[in-house]
Length: 141
Image 1 (cartoon, rainbow, N blue to C red):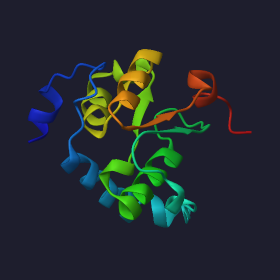
Image 2 (cartoon, helix red, strand yellow):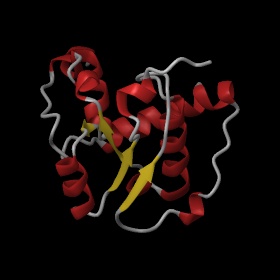
Image 3 (spheres, helix red, strand yellow):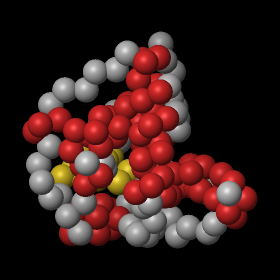
């Protein structure tokens, strides 16, 4: 099983890599681990619109991004798979072999204006952190 995941090839520009079963497995993992650890509360989920939407945030912690995982899990539980955003991810992260195989089935796509436009045209939700790698790698202090 792990071998099949690690060896699977993904086009990091494709918006068709998402696997709903992978999203469901991640949500269950987040609910068992990150949510209790961070004592996370997400509000405003009732305001998520139907159809396309752009979620904008800021973060640090490189690929850990607990805010991403916690928000995605809460959106999934409250509104279903259609509320879970496709993430515009840095090419460096998606270029790492195991990271690519883990993020691509969750809906990660190489960050670009073209990818965002394709996703929005397909009535998908898009998550972007406009600070990019500078925000992701900033010191915690």
